[in-house]
Amino acid sequence: MRKMFWILVLFSSTNLALAQVSSCADVAIFDPKLPIYPPITRVAHMQSIERFSVVVHPDGHSDISFLDGPSKGMFQVFIASSREFLESRRYGWVTVGEHQACTYIAEIEYRMLPEQADSPNNFMRVTDIDLAHTLVEVKDTKPTITY
Image 1 (cartoon, rainbow, N blue to C red):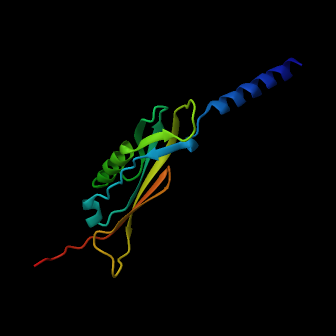
Image 2 (image 1 turned 90 degrees about the horizontal axis):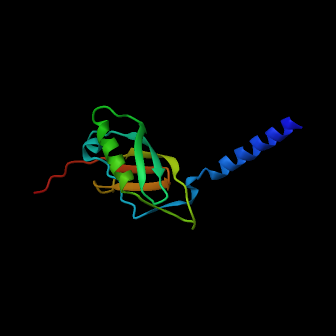
Image 3 (image 1 turned 120 degrees about the horizontal axis):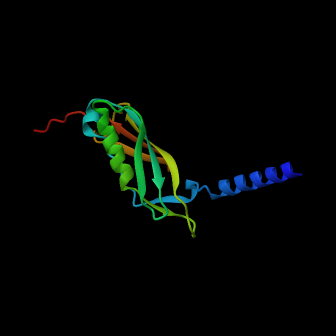
C-alpha cells in the first residue's frame, strides 16, 4: 500500500510539472522587421541556415543565443543579420492571463533562387513559415550599366 501511495504522489507531481511548462503556441509576433540578405553574401552566391535559441519572457522581451550553422568567415554576416532580425521581433500573447517564459528554436534560412528571365535584379522574398522558421530568398544580383 505504501508503494502505491508513492507511485500516486510521483505521478501527480509529474503531471503538475508538465502542466506548468509553457509552450510558445500562444505567442504572436507584432511589428515584424524584415531580415536582410547581406549584399556581400548575395553577390558571392552564399546560402545558409542559422539556428538560434529564443526565450520569450512574459513581458514580451526575448533573449537570443546562437546554436548552430555555418559561422566561419563570411558566414558571420548571416549570423549578424539573423540576430538583428530576431532581436527586432516584438512578442505578445494571444491568450489573456499569466504566462511563463517559453523557449523555441528559430531557423533563418537564406536561399538563392534560380535565374528567371523577366524578374527584376533586386528581387527578394521573405516567408515566415511559422514562428520558428523564416525563409529569405533572393535572386542573384547582376551589375547594371546605365548611360
